[in-house]
Length: 345
Image (cartoon, rainbow, N blue to C red; front, side):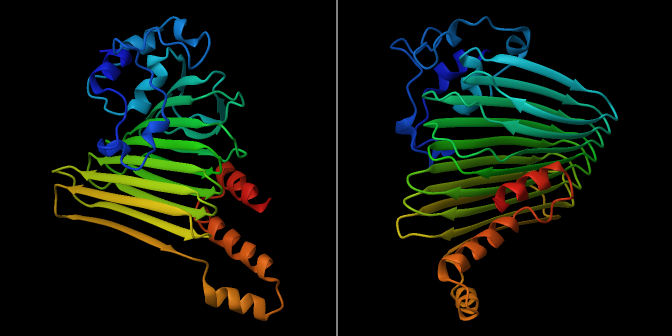
């Protein structure tokens, strides 16, 4: 089944779909024409809808895919970039989509060490959608990150499909500062014993920015670990949402999973929505989730101001500390350097 057919089946996103609970679905242009087809709907990006499909697109089966954002790039005939990273390789790379719709397929070999930075497409159009299919081999160590300058792009989707073999490590980190509407969605399958997935995200939003994250992490093997840490600094009438689901399989003992969302509201009109979901089918696990929402710490502010620090400077110091703490536990790699450098500006 191809992506177009699957979109026809599931239809456009609706608020009653749990994948889109918090997202302003009315802002998504209707890519289906009157006949329920998107094959000939070319108004989103001139010229892209007639691009030929490639073999990799045709080989994918979307019969069980329910996320519109994961289907959209291929339904709009995104060019697929396929890359295989050999076993034991040490590679650093930057990935950048040259069109509004992009599809990247990465096959990372056993024991490889890989650092991948994702850059934004600077072209301003009505909507941008990217899909990344990443297979991580046994014992591989992979970091994926992005911290791009703020963009006024009206609507951006990024979907990641990550599968991990035994004893692999994936660290996924991002800083989100766009002023439009964005959504990061992810399906991560920990398929081998000893696999670890670490997710860290910081949203710094102002005005009417709206950023949404939707993660599904499946522990399909015993002795696997997943960590989710999301932090938000929200001002103006900005809105952020975090929807994280963890699924632990029946025979998956000794699983450790944690999810924590921390939000600081810097204005009365800023808001956040959080929905943690745990589906656990074995009792020998340790799974936690937490959520905090508040203002900047009044005692810390008082302490800094009482030491002669101007109030606005003290406020910026506390915000910076809150932001940097998101990434301090990361190892000393290009990702950590880039993320902290972004926050030091």
